[in-house]
Figure 1: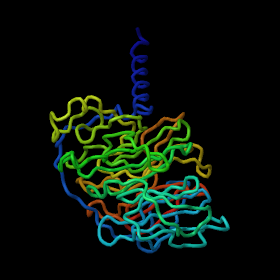
Figure 2: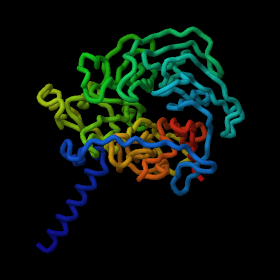
Figure 3: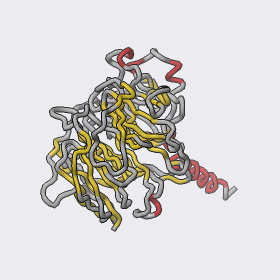
Figure 4: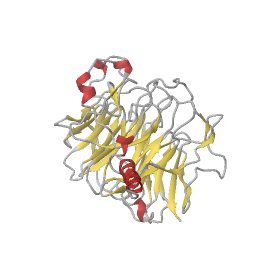
Length: 407
């Protein structure tokens, strides 16, 4: 009998560990009631970076300004030949609506040439090279161009292979694209047109979804639904499962609803706008779709409420220490609907055997310069792995791309 209590205590610890650090991490999340705190508007003041200042990399890493002088650089794509493309498009005001090419011909990690790869687009975001074609996702459709490796400008006539619903609530105009590992399918993320269906669900057709199409634009189907704003997408290197980072809804209080990253179940429904983080009914949609509420899936990893978790990249290189191998980096653009700023950083989620093995960890911080005055230096969005194995981070508010390298 003397050993029973310590044994039981030990077993409880093991259970808690398994809940928190297994692929079921999200299911251990305890959520407050809706409106437990007041919904507030707390927009950050972006001041940019003074000379010599930058975000803060963790111990064992260094950070440098990889490139600057952009106009709202939101997304980064590394092409098969290691050229780097940057999508420049803005939510408000004049938008550059172009893709900028950075070429490092001698492979020393510093780009030698910078040029406009493609211009006169309509809020471009996702980019993809697949076979003999280059794809770019405008807010209103997917364009395809003939492409040969090493081209430094696109001059061919575009073919619009898919029309998409344009624009959207706040920053939900972004359309990301990714191909399946075998190149047979393309996945297209389409965010909602509203915060929570307030404009009527007839305005949300083909929205809040990840769509699947063939490379020629045919065969469209909804791969997964109820995803309010799924922006970052990537296939986990071990499991080959599609993962996405989702920007959740506003105006339910400081701690609702957590943004999340999740392995996407084919045919799965993730709640928007009727439920959130599993079968938790949104009070603004009470009684409207009880069967959909019941079938709402619980996402895998909560990323904090109002963090605007957008960027997603799995670390497949070898420059960083082994613990980062095949784990996920998430760019958090930052809150506006929370009394204290949240997000404004890049976090890392470790993976083991294709599943999350721990909670999110702060990786690139220091974007918040003065929390009391809501003053920030910039806002991270897209993250990707460079050809050298460093991490590239698009800071669209200060028009910089940062590079984080192992020392």
